Length: 290
Image (cartoon, rainbow, N blue to C red; front, side, top):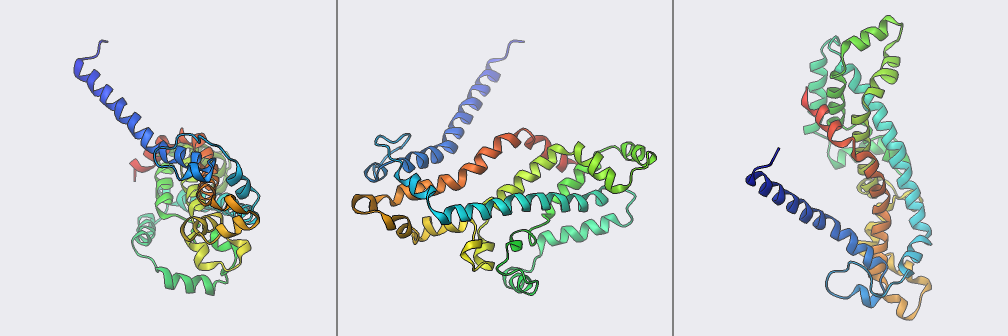
């Protein structure tokens, strides 16, 4: 069917807008990637840096050979993987009974859970709670306090409600108990929302740094983002990067910052495309019914 002139103009404007939006979103990454491979003089050059005119691998060599970077990377991978798996597990265990209509007083339980979205203990009471639980200076502090996201659990509950009750009834007739129904029937059918919530949780864990600053004193347990914060904001670790360099190599502060930024961002950028296809379906279906 031939499109009208108005529809053609609208689609042309929409495509143009999306191209401009993509350029705006991609430019910071391209710019920082170019700076990370640049010489000091090239990094200080004004204007748009789409590629380094004078390339150097010095900044990346310093970042990738730094022990603290890999130690923080290991701690971040630990909290991202274990934290995400535990969050999905416990949110599923909480969301499944709330999604069953035969659960007595389930609306009361839901309202009590929603209440925690608006009121919390804030920083000082939370600190004393963490201290009384013995989680100070422990890697478990990365996992346990944020184990369940109320918002994500409600999305998961709504998604579970869309699964027909007849499937559960059929499984019970075959002798399945509630845990078997959850892990062998409900969760496999909920792959889009599980993938979406996993990505949300993983990105949150990967970018988190404030809890590490508050609760962790041991440098060996710090995450990559706190290391990045010291390099980019305070610059205190540039002296450590430059400890074994001399002369003109001391001017590599900006390329080292850029290389550290790209090193911390690349893993989550690589993971995102594999889960992006579930994003729209998982979010929309889980948020429509409640």
